[in-house]
View 1 (tube, rainbow over the protein chains, first blue to last red):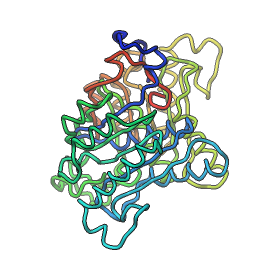
View 2: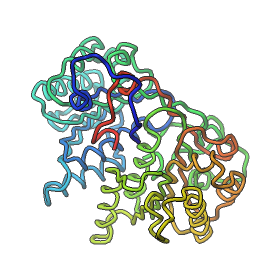
View 3: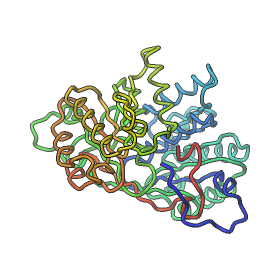
Length: 204
Length: 204
């Protein structure tokens, strides 16, 4: 929900309109549920605005397909058919990135993650999308598969009006520092705590 | 993301499958962004499973229409046309609930909230939906517009396989106690802090 008023009006030489439309770097971190779910919820809003959306899932499982992918790809097809909403590209690391599927790539997660980030850098430079969902991208950052300073510098200096949302636990402090909007999803209680496994429709 | 294993297997007489498919009462609370966004993201998953979804927005603004409503109503229309996904009903308090629109109702938020809850109770008793999104429902609870004990008892004893997600700040401790899954979205940083207003595609 939009809140009423900002706490103060900064002396940054921008009009309210210019300030309002600055592109955002957003981070959903913390040990609780809802980080990715809220990011895909943002993608819904973006689709409704007709934005061009790129989703990049940095997940290890090759076969995994979440409900959001099916729905957002359906919405992308609707866009192609009727012009409603915007286009959506959904890429995931597990089975090899779709733009460069090569045999064996799926075996080496570090290489695959670095390739994913290199492609995202190219797209940011080309102003390819209006919203980037970098799902679970904190993990390759944490594990040294991509260079954190390179990520932070690239995201900070991205051209044009490109929004980016990064999800995952343990967001690097440098990423948090660079971000405009950071929410920590804190685990308070989860069915897993009392022995219930994840279920269809809720967890995926 | 589904986690691998629960921490322990409870001695509750249920099979893993039975336990897995227990309906959940979920709460997204805290002062950060993403509570409603993650709830509507859950609705995406639910739609993809073909579930019947009821959204009840307990918001004060009559005219407000968020992107998620447009998209989920579009998905509902797609369901009606092609059978894909599930049906979605979207109700909001601001302009009078759509099932009982009366002149003047929108002026009295307390009455409107109580009417909304009464309808939700009827639907829960009738097992009308598979997922209920009670958006910003913590506020009428907090303000005494609905009886918290009645809400908690009704949700705890709801029949069948009905999932419920409640969003809003300051969730009542009794609701948290009754819930299966609680996430606190904590505000770490928001553009509003530095004088940037909410923007289209991000906040709505």
